[in-house]
Structure formats: structure tokens, C-alpha cells
Length: 189
Image (cartoon, rainbow, N blue to C red; front, side, top):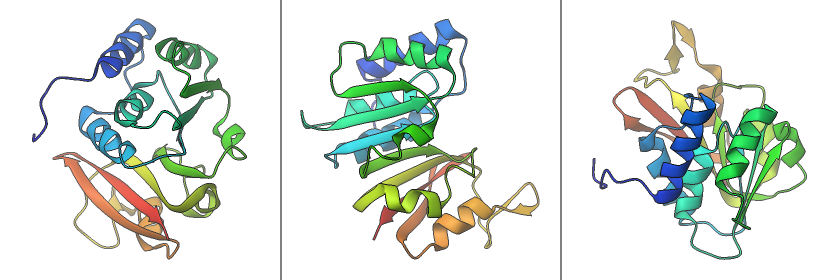
């Protein structure tokens, strides 16, 4: 690891909230550091679809530089959204919504969008392309690394990953963030 193992204070708070809520399906630190680094290059409005308890949003927030940058995040489960809102209750730059991700569709365009690859219907390039500003970055995590083309997962073509890596509206790359997980980073052309 090229970065120090210490966590940003807001990420530490997010982990504590997640533990209290009994929620353990959150953004890994390796992916989080990637999100923070990418957020540091962005201005405007960022978003996360599928907040959980806010760990990914906390990583995004840890990278934000400008006072005018905003992060919008939506979580369908009201209990989890309430837990995430606790992390950012005094932060005017972050808005947590207890709602389906579709409520954010008219709140873009987004300069950075963090999506979970576990919900293919919500994260296809066709649904996301129009939400992004030119040069906007989309990050999808939780892929199992694959060296073949087309990419395979559990013996089948991973159509979501294949779509992202071959969509002409995006310049995309798969990045290994740990030996057992990768992310797709796609920039809107």
C-alpha cells in the first residue's frame, strides 16, 4: 500500500456508525482511497447511488477540496439512510436522501458518480451516460478481477463490465484495487 494506513476522521466516524447499525457491506478502504483521490480532482456535484451507512460517501467527502462541491447520496433503506445522515448532519456539502437512486436523476449533471456493480439495472452505461457532465467520472466497484475477454464471472460473461469497458460514450479501464477486487473507472467523453 502506498498510502498510510490511517483513515480520515470522517471515514472512521462512518465505520463506527456502520458497526452500530450492524451494516457490514461497505466500500473497502482500497476503493475508498481511490474515491478520495478522484474526488480531489472534481468540482461541482458528485453522487453515490446506494449509500448504505455512508462509508463510500465519507471517502468521497475526505477528498473534496472546494467549498462549492456537493455530494448527493441516496439510500433506499430508511434505517441505513438515517444512520448515514448522522455522519454528515453538520456538513452542508453532503445531502443524504432516504430514497431510491432515481430521485437523483434530475439533480445532475454529476462530475463524479459512485455506483455499486451489484445492481446492473441501475448502473448500465445507457442509464448513466446522460447523468454525467463531459469529463465526468463514473466508478463502479466490487468486481472480481478477470484477465480474459470477454470478462467472466462465475463461468458467465460479465455483461455489465463488458458494457462499461466497450461503451463508446466512455473511456474506461478496469483497475485492480486489491488482489481480490477491481473497479471500473469510466470518463464521459
